[in-house]
Amino acid sequence: MLERDTAELLAAAGAGDSTAWDALVERYARLVWAVARGFALSAADAADVSQTTWLRLVEHLGRLREPEHLGGWLAATARHECLRILRKNGREVVGVDADIDVESGEPTPEAVILDNERDRLLWQSLGEISQRCQVLLRALATTPPPSYQDVSAALGMPVGSIGPTRARCLDHLKKRLDLHVGTSQRHTDGGA
Amino acid sequence: MAEPAFEPLLAELRNVVDQADPIPEPVVAAAKAVFTWRTIDAELAELVADSFVTAAGTRTADAARLLTFQADDTEVEVEIAATGATRRITGQLVPPGPAEITIRWAGGSVEARTDELGRFSADNVPALAVSLSILRRGAGRPVVTSWVSI
View 1 (spheres, helix red, strand yellow):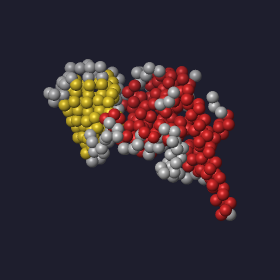
View 2 (tube, helix red, strand yellow):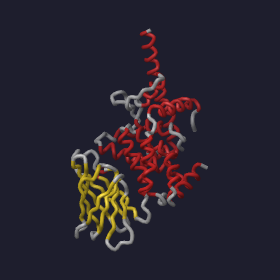
View 3 (cartoon, rainbow over the protein chains, first blue to last red):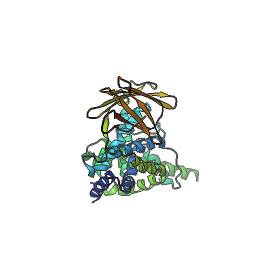
View 4 (tube, one colour):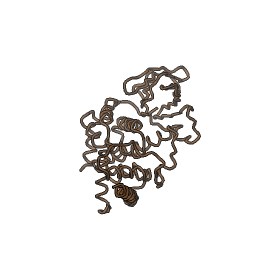
């Protein structure tokens, strides 16, 4: 149903209907953003990736071979742009696809204010798992929920490995969170 | 497919990400605005080579970046050099021939003309996503290159 809607919106946008275009942006902008931020790009670079990705779609209107897989196409385009920016910035790209935890050496995403302690620890934990897991979980956490096909495009992984990888990434996240929650509680108990 | 045990964690994560890193409204607005860049009746020259991608690791910070765009009958080779905050673009049209080049970006554009060898150049191009529109003399429709962030 959603797929057919997307193909219809694409066709309408290709015919010049700007409201159809706006609807496509509303539907997929968060996925594109999630991919860029999952690669730990700065907000400015993520905005750049978003802009280039949507410009790419504009130029490909009427040229997409599988309009029903637009989410995957956008995710893959965003992924390529992210890798391009990482190289442009001289950052190491080799580890991006590896299942290696970022650990605490790398700065976590910009400090944000979260009132809830558990939320804060979960956000911190997300910044500490592998880059691949961050991209995957950020993509999965977008609204509307993307298909496994979209997520596999964001990661450059076969669709069949998304399920197991998803489980592993959530497990990593959970362990990190439990660790921080434990530390935080001990700290609170000791200080009380 | 999805293990039910992890569903609450994913829901929690969704909530945290929405709070901590929502997509900025200007990013959504910019994505909507690019629709005005739709080019009807132009042939697309795809980006087929980018030295930033192929020569990763050997690159130095001030090295020029080489891009190649390809359409059916036209190839455009472009060199991007950083000149302070802006970029200098030099290009080569293959096969050569007289053409008018328009370098477009969000908020502006600059015109250039090829010489007899198919070369062209433009200075002070902002470091944004750009696309080149190439209209060969006598051609019915322009060739536009894929957008690329420089």
